[in-house]
Image (cartoon, rainbow, N blue to C red; front, side):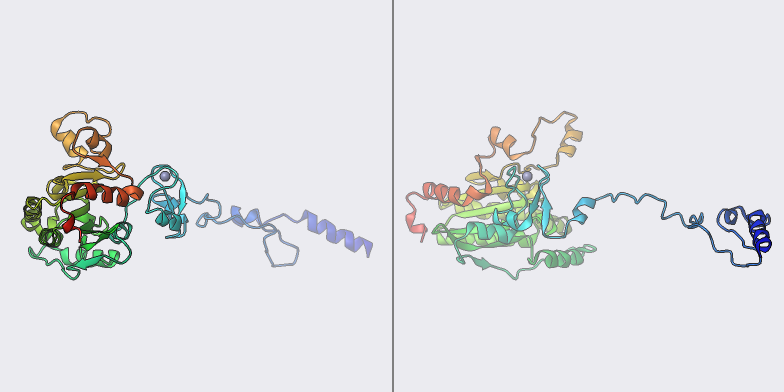
Length: 334
Ligand SMILES: [Zn+2]
């Protein structure tokens, strides 16, 4: 019995680990027992050359990554101070960063709510829609996508309402709708609300944010520049005030028309305001642009803007300005 055990042990340890005909790969991981066909690996086999996924370090996520890691709609990050902010807290502060005062974009309805008393706002022409007058490829689809995204018919809301008890005509643009571009509907709605203000003897306030005229409507959008300014000229003849509030960004055809002809021109802190973009100007003039070029602060220092007003102070400051500008026309503030 003992000699048989010894013989078996000897056979086991003298047995070559692998058959020389086997591949190099399997040499490392198999061991044959005498008389046993089973070739189970004795250690976890390394992954084959075609399956190296376990050995690779996971790639860092790039391109808008950090935003995706945060649950959509709950947190947001301030682009200026990089603080992570609870979105509800941000909305409660009119989309202004509590840490550094950065003014996030505010939707048109958010702006209306921030300026108007209670439910005093009466919207005008809310069903007016753009038409594809030039048969511009893709324009109708773009309009529909923007309508779904913002819940608006076009890039402006107009109407009348009360601001700390003073009746005013208000126009508010929304950059979220096709970059706040001014087409026929934006121009027509603004013109109508200005004409209503002229008729009723009340002031006009327009909060602008726009990339400019709407290229999909070509000449028809450019005509809105003259039309809105014409309506404001008639409003001005009745010695009624127009206050233009410039928010980030207000550029091109809007800045070159009604937004820059206010009796009083206000802007939000840090707003980008101009006609052509800085790169175009730099390439055209071949000159270095001064620091802070095309910001609200730069334009205030150079005389185009009368005052920079933080968003939370805007309603109160507008009420003061209106009282001053409407002196002697109290009957108009019915
Ligand atoms: Zn901030």
